[in-house]
Amino acid sequence: MDHDPRRLRAFIEANSAVGAAPLLPELRLHLAVELTPLWHATEQQLAADGLEPPFWAFAWAGGQALARFVLDAPAVVRGRHVLDVASGSGLVAIAAARAGAARVVAVDRDPLAVAAIELNAELNGVAIEARCAEAGNCATAEVVLAGDVCYDREMALAVMGWLRAQAGAGALVLLGDPGRAYLPTEGLEEMARYRVPTLDGVEASAEKVGVVYRLR
Image 1: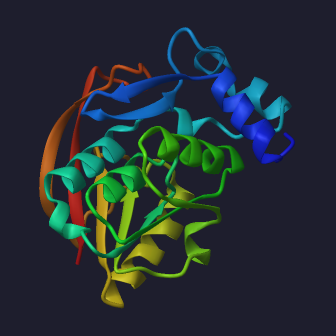
Image 2: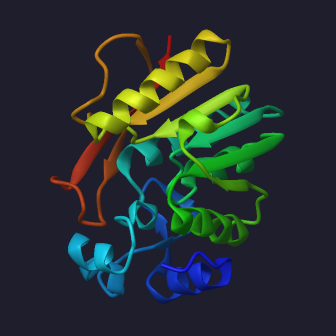
């Protein structure tokens, strides 16, 4: 797909609807819902158009839990430089900006996600630096946030290794996860948990328990 920012924005606006994640009614996002084309698109159809699966178009349970935690405990980000990796819709980054972070950078490898982050930041009246990059190519920050990065084995190995390195270098690293298959079993300190309704229909159950962890 053409990566012209105007075309990417137009694609998102034509294929999504503005709504709110169940756990974060105060924030607005461009989301795929039953009445939008992305809801019905198959992975094969997307690939034929040169598109990655639209992870940016759904509010995943781990990201919702992490965003809720940041809004409920704003001191963890207030006045600090925050990096949100594999940002998707930008939900967690938006929560950090709303909670008073001094600077928020959101990165995702999908150019459409980057455009969605910019649109969603505008919807919520916050300033976010959206960048197209892999987590491993990012400069560090005082606080590093990651929601739902353990659903794929290869991605989990790469991202978790990088996140642990950031924690070892002194960053506060927070991970939001609803029990994905490749969530590590060691080195995690539970900070909070939330019951997350999965109204978008992309999860296997109607509700997930989203847990926020600190990487030790």
